[in-house]
Image 1 (cartoon, rainbow, N blue to C red):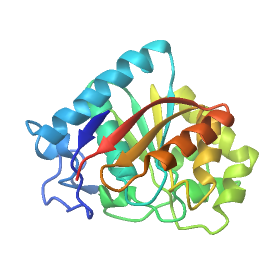
Image 2: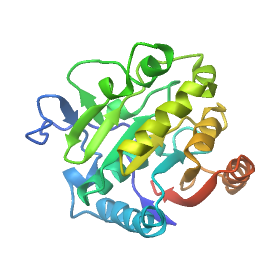
Image 3: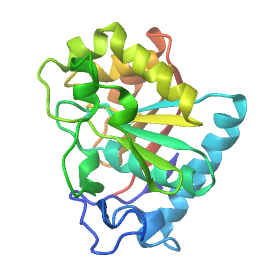
Image 4: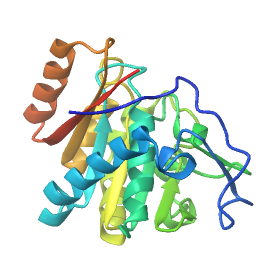
Length: 234
Protein backbone atom coordinates (compact mmCIF):
# COMPACT_ATOMS: atom_id res chain seq x y z
CA UNK A 1 0.00 0.00 0.00
CA UNK A 2 1.11 3.56 -0.66
CA UNK A 3 1.34 6.11 2.11
CA UNK A 4 0.83 9.84 2.37
CA UNK A 5 0.73 12.34 5.21
CA UNK A 6 -2.52 14.25 5.60
CA UNK A 7 -3.42 17.32 7.60
CA UNK A 8 -6.65 17.19 9.62
CA UNK A 9 -7.77 20.59 8.35
CA UNK A 10 -6.89 21.67 4.79
CA UNK A 11 -5.19 25.08 4.78
CA UNK A 12 -6.28 27.40 2.00
CA UNK A 13 -3.51 28.77 -0.17
CA UNK A 14 -3.50 32.43 -1.10
CA UNK A 15 -2.08 31.62 -4.54
CA UNK A 16 -4.03 29.79 -7.18
CA UNK A 17 -3.43 29.09 -10.83
CA UNK A 18 -4.03 32.08 -13.08
CA UNK A 19 -7.03 30.43 -14.71
CA UNK A 20 -8.73 29.22 -11.53
CA UNK A 21 -7.69 32.06 -9.25
CA UNK A 22 -10.76 34.21 -9.81
CA UNK A 23 -13.10 31.28 -9.15
CA UNK A 24 -11.33 29.16 -6.54
CA UNK A 25 -8.79 29.20 -3.76
CA UNK A 26 -6.80 25.99 -3.82
CA UNK A 27 -5.69 24.21 -0.67
CA UNK A 28 -2.03 23.78 0.17
CA UNK A 29 -2.97 20.16 0.89
CA UNK A 30 -3.17 19.64 -2.87
CA UNK A 31 0.45 18.58 -2.74
CA UNK A 32 1.05 18.12 -6.44
CA UNK A 33 0.35 21.85 -6.77
CA UNK A 34 1.78 23.22 -3.51
CA UNK A 35 4.88 21.03 -3.09
CA UNK A 36 5.35 18.96 -6.26
CA UNK A 37 8.85 17.83 -5.25
CA UNK A 38 7.76 16.57 -1.81
CA UNK A 39 7.31 13.00 -0.60
CA UNK A 40 3.55 13.39 -0.29
CA UNK A 41 3.26 14.44 -3.92
CA UNK A 42 5.45 11.49 -4.92
CA UNK A 43 3.18 9.11 -3.02
CA UNK A 44 0.20 10.38 -5.03
CA UNK A 45 2.20 9.89 -8.23
CA UNK A 46 2.83 6.24 -7.29
CA UNK A 47 -0.90 5.74 -6.75
CA UNK A 48 -1.66 7.54 -10.01
CA UNK A 49 0.76 5.34 -11.94
CA UNK A 50 -0.86 2.21 -10.51
CA UNK A 51 -4.36 3.35 -11.43
CA UNK A 52 -3.39 4.35 -14.95
CA UNK A 53 -1.71 1.00 -15.53
CA UNK A 54 -4.24 -1.23 -13.79
CA UNK A 55 -7.50 0.71 -14.24
CA UNK A 56 -7.58 3.30 -17.02
CA UNK A 57 -5.66 1.24 -19.55
CA UNK A 58 -8.24 -1.51 -19.12
CA UNK A 59 -10.90 0.94 -20.28
CA UNK A 60 -12.43 1.64 -16.86
CA UNK A 61 -13.77 5.17 -16.47
CA UNK A 62 -15.19 5.35 -12.94
CA UNK A 63 -13.88 5.06 -9.38
CA UNK A 64 -15.49 5.49 -5.97
CA UNK A 65 -13.11 6.42 -3.14
CA UNK A 66 -14.40 4.82 0.06
CA UNK A 67 -13.32 4.59 3.69
CA UNK A 68 -14.50 2.44 6.60
CA UNK A 69 -14.70 5.36 9.04
CA UNK A 70 -14.52 9.14 9.32
CA UNK A 71 -11.14 10.85 9.44
CA UNK A 72 -9.17 8.56 7.12
CA UNK A 73 -8.41 11.25 4.54
CA UNK A 74 -10.83 9.97 1.93
CA UNK A 75 -11.46 13.46 0.51
CA UNK A 76 -7.72 14.19 0.61
CA UNK A 77 -6.94 11.13 -1.50
CA UNK A 78 -9.79 11.77 -3.95
CA UNK A 79 -8.79 15.43 -4.42
CA UNK A 80 -5.06 14.79 -4.82
CA UNK A 81 -5.57 11.82 -7.11
CA UNK A 82 -7.89 13.84 -9.34
CA UNK A 83 -5.31 16.63 -9.60
CA UNK A 84 -2.58 14.12 -10.39
CA UNK A 85 -4.56 12.44 -13.14
CA UNK A 86 -5.52 15.76 -14.70
CA UNK A 87 -1.85 16.70 -14.80
CA UNK A 88 -1.14 13.68 -17.01
CA UNK A 89 -3.80 14.69 -19.54
CA UNK A 90 -6.63 12.50 -18.22
CA UNK A 91 -9.88 14.44 -18.56
CA UNK A 92 -11.07 14.02 -14.98
CA UNK A 93 -14.32 14.80 -13.18
CA UNK A 94 -14.25 14.84 -9.37
CA UNK A 95 -17.62 14.58 -7.62
CA UNK A 96 -18.30 15.19 -3.94
CA UNK A 97 -20.72 12.35 -3.19
CA UNK A 98 -20.74 13.11 0.54
CA UNK A 99 -24.07 14.87 0.89
CA UNK A 100 -23.92 14.30 4.67
CA UNK A 101 -20.82 16.39 5.35
CA UNK A 102 -19.32 17.69 2.09
CA UNK A 103 -15.53 17.86 2.11
CA UNK A 104 -14.17 18.89 -1.28
CA UNK A 105 -14.83 22.60 -0.77
CA UNK A 106 -12.03 22.48 1.78
CA UNK A 107 -9.63 21.70 -1.06
CA UNK A 108 -11.21 23.75 -3.85
CA UNK A 109 -12.91 26.72 -2.23
CA UNK A 110 -15.27 28.39 -4.74
CA UNK A 111 -15.60 32.16 -4.84
CA UNK A 112 -19.39 31.79 -4.93
CA UNK A 113 -21.80 29.02 -4.00
CA UNK A 114 -23.64 27.21 -6.75
CA UNK A 115 -25.72 24.10 -7.40
CA UNK A 116 -24.22 20.68 -6.75
CA UNK A 117 -25.03 16.99 -6.74
CA UNK A 118 -27.94 17.48 -4.37
CA UNK A 119 -29.55 20.00 -6.69
CA UNK A 120 -29.05 17.78 -9.75
CA UNK A 121 -30.76 14.86 -8.00
CA UNK A 122 -33.58 16.82 -6.35
CA UNK A 123 -34.53 19.06 -9.30
CA UNK A 124 -35.86 17.95 -12.66
CA UNK A 125 -35.00 21.26 -14.33
CA UNK A 126 -31.26 21.25 -13.64
CA UNK A 127 -28.88 19.56 -16.07
CA UNK A 128 -25.71 18.16 -14.55
CA UNK A 129 -23.54 20.08 -17.03
CA UNK A 130 -24.78 23.38 -15.61
CA UNK A 131 -23.60 22.39 -12.11
CA UNK A 132 -20.12 21.20 -13.12
CA UNK A 133 -17.18 23.60 -12.76
CA UNK A 134 -15.02 22.98 -15.81
CA UNK A 135 -11.22 23.25 -15.82
CA UNK A 136 -10.67 24.20 -12.19
CA UNK A 137 -7.14 23.35 -13.20
CA UNK A 138 -6.45 22.19 -16.77
CA UNK A 139 -8.16 18.85 -17.27
CA UNK A 140 -9.97 18.77 -13.92
CA UNK A 141 -13.67 19.52 -13.49
CA UNK A 142 -15.65 19.49 -10.24
CA UNK A 143 -19.19 18.73 -9.13
CA UNK A 144 -19.66 19.76 -5.52
CA UNK A 145 -22.15 18.08 -3.19
CA UNK A 146 -24.34 21.14 -2.78
CA UNK A 147 -26.18 21.41 0.49
CA UNK A 148 -26.12 18.69 3.13
CA UNK A 149 -29.06 16.35 2.65
CA UNK A 150 -30.51 14.04 5.34
CA UNK A 151 -32.39 12.26 2.53
CA UNK A 152 -29.16 11.51 0.67
CA UNK A 153 -29.77 7.73 0.61
CA UNK A 154 -33.13 8.22 -1.12
CA UNK A 155 -31.60 10.57 -3.70
CA UNK A 156 -28.72 8.20 -4.40
CA UNK A 157 -31.06 5.22 -4.60
CA UNK A 158 -33.15 6.71 -7.38
CA UNK A 159 -32.70 6.18 -11.10
CA UNK A 160 -31.56 9.77 -11.48
CA UNK A 161 -28.23 9.11 -9.78
CA UNK A 162 -27.34 6.26 -12.11
CA UNK A 163 -28.34 8.33 -15.13
CA UNK A 164 -26.16 11.20 -13.89
CA UNK A 165 -23.14 8.92 -13.43
CA UNK A 166 -23.68 7.31 -16.83
CA UNK A 167 -23.63 10.75 -18.44
CA UNK A 168 -20.45 11.73 -16.58
CA UNK A 169 -18.68 8.50 -17.50
CA UNK A 170 -19.48 9.15 -21.16
CA UNK A 171 -18.15 12.72 -21.05
CA UNK A 172 -14.92 12.27 -19.06
CA UNK A 173 -11.96 9.91 -19.23
CA UNK A 174 -12.35 9.21 -15.52
CA UNK A 175 -15.04 10.12 -13.01
CA UNK A 176 -13.94 9.97 -9.35
CA UNK A 177 -16.44 10.30 -6.52
CA UNK A 178 -15.67 10.94 -2.85
CA UNK A 179 -18.01 9.11 -0.45
CA UNK A 180 -19.11 9.36 3.20
CA UNK A 181 -17.70 6.97 5.84
CA UNK A 182 -19.12 3.50 5.28
CA UNK A 183 -19.58 2.66 8.97
CA UNK A 184 -21.95 5.60 9.42
CA UNK A 185 -24.00 5.68 6.20
CA UNK A 186 -24.97 3.23 3.49
CA UNK A 187 -24.32 5.90 0.85
CA UNK A 188 -20.81 4.65 0.01
CA UNK A 189 -22.06 1.18 -0.92
CA UNK A 190 -24.79 2.60 -3.14
CA UNK A 191 -22.38 4.97 -4.85
CA UNK A 192 -19.78 2.26 -5.38
CA UNK A 193 -22.36 -0.15 -6.78
CA UNK A 194 -23.26 2.41 -9.45
CA UNK A 195 -19.61 3.28 -10.15
CA UNK A 196 -18.73 -0.47 -10.25
CA UNK A 197 -15.13 0.16 -9.14
CA UNK A 198 -13.83 1.35 -5.78
CA UNK A 199 -10.63 2.11 -3.89
CA UNK A 200 -10.56 1.85 -0.09
CA UNK A 201 -8.67 4.40 2.03
CA UNK A 202 -7.35 3.68 5.53
CA UNK A 203 -5.37 5.71 8.05
CA UNK A 204 -2.33 4.35 9.83
CA UNK A 205 -2.78 3.90 13.60
CA UNK A 206 -6.51 4.60 13.31
CA UNK A 207 -8.18 2.23 10.86
CA UNK A 208 -8.67 -1.39 11.89
CA UNK A 209 -7.84 -4.24 9.55
CA UNK A 210 -11.15 -5.90 10.38
CA UNK A 211 -13.07 -2.77 9.35
CA UNK A 212 -11.16 -2.60 6.07
CA UNK A 213 -11.85 -6.28 5.45
CA UNK A 214 -15.54 -5.86 6.25
CA UNK A 215 -15.90 -2.92 3.86
CA UNK A 216 -14.11 -4.76 1.06
CA UNK A 217 -16.30 -7.82 1.61
CA UNK A 218 -19.45 -5.68 1.55
CA UNK A 219 -18.40 -3.92 -1.64
CA UNK A 220 -17.51 -7.22 -3.27
CA UNK A 221 -20.90 -8.64 -2.26
CA UNK A 222 -22.46 -5.64 -4.03
CA UNK A 223 -20.55 -6.68 -7.18
CA UNK A 224 -18.12 -3.81 -6.87
CA UNK A 225 -14.55 -4.47 -7.97
CA UNK A 226 -12.12 -3.13 -5.36
CA UNK A 227 -9.07 -2.08 -7.38
CA UNK A 228 -6.80 -1.42 -4.40
CA UNK A 229 -6.29 0.37 -1.11
CA UNK A 230 -4.34 3.43 0.05
CA UNK A 231 -2.85 3.91 3.51
CA UNK A 232 -2.50 7.45 4.85
CA UNK A 233 0.38 7.87 7.26
CA UNK A 234 -0.01 10.57 9.91
